[in-house]
Length: 117
Image 1 (cartoon, rainbow, N blue to C red):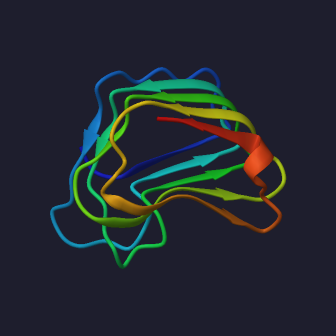
Image 2 (image 1 turned 120 degrees about the horizontal axis):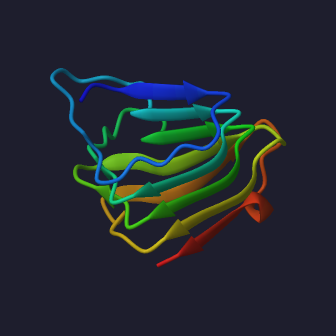
């Protein structure tokens, strides 16, 4: 499956999804823009250390990521952008291939996300 993004989606419930690159790409593999009420289980994703992040959330709320895996080196696992993110939970998995688990831009704060290892 190639890269994808979702904008203004509710609810979203993918299970056992994996993303791989055919050619190097600096875009996040998954972008959530104004997603409400999403549950993602067993997401496997290839990182790119030159890319800003593997996942980017903007204005997204009530998102649960269960058992995500980063399969190749990445700079950041999840980047939150803006003040509209809220109630995001990353539960378990193996994101150790990412140099940084979380990053925040444009007013996003750590209070919007819980990281449970």
